[in-house]
Image (cartoon, rainbow, N blue to C red):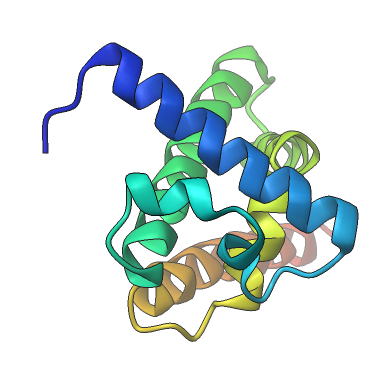
Length: 132
């Protein structure tokens, strides 16, 4: 759905307030309950979770690209650095996603990300054994 720049900014403010409230309270299970402004932009919790997952995925993909470009060819180190950087910057968002990892709206994306990160770690471990 197309939204004006002003509407997207208001949406981002509402989402940021929701995540900030979750971080302050330490409760990530249903942060939208304490931030009713998000309902102006989302139809249900699945809609919010899909938006958060897309935000996370875009941030991680961008960080991975930058880390690989700036790195020295160690893919595992570059991806690990990118993941750590995005976790530091978007820790609250990540905790909301993790609290809802089994929700049908994002479960598949969460499993795919975990499989990708696991396969990268396994491949790197195999490379280390071969080098030894």
